[in-house]
Length: 145
Image 1 (cartoon, rainbow, N blue to C red):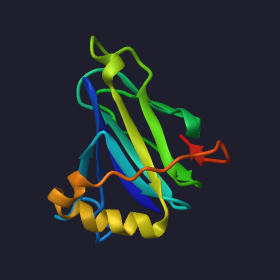
Image 2 (image 1 turned 90 degrees about the vertical axis):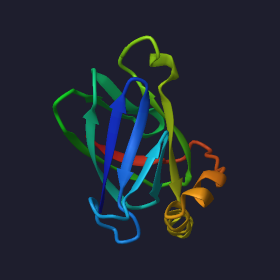
Image 3 (image 1 turned 180 degrees about the vertical axis):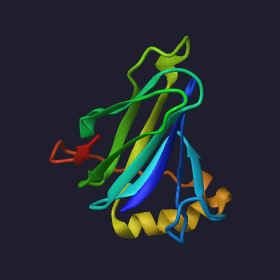
């Protein structure tokens, strides 16, 4: 099991996840904006927070939707089962830039994810690397808010 933090704010999603040590809140944590990288067949516990107004974290292909409420940490979990790129949306009208508040979750094989963690430790390499995976609608995730 891994823990990730998901932050919403007008008008972006940002993420904090463990680095190579696998422990959150240490010096090697990886912080991203607009992309959350996870590996297949791993349970991810999320801590969802809003930095400003009410938002709603939605990954339609996972059938996951959870409100982010200012001043609260909302927890839940998901387990992605198939590699691919999946849309993250805000489904709560959160202001004039609401329609621009898109991100993606990138589900990788364990090998791909380990390589991404190594690259993410070097920001210059991470910025130049963009995995491109597709899905065919098979079982994508197990979700429990």
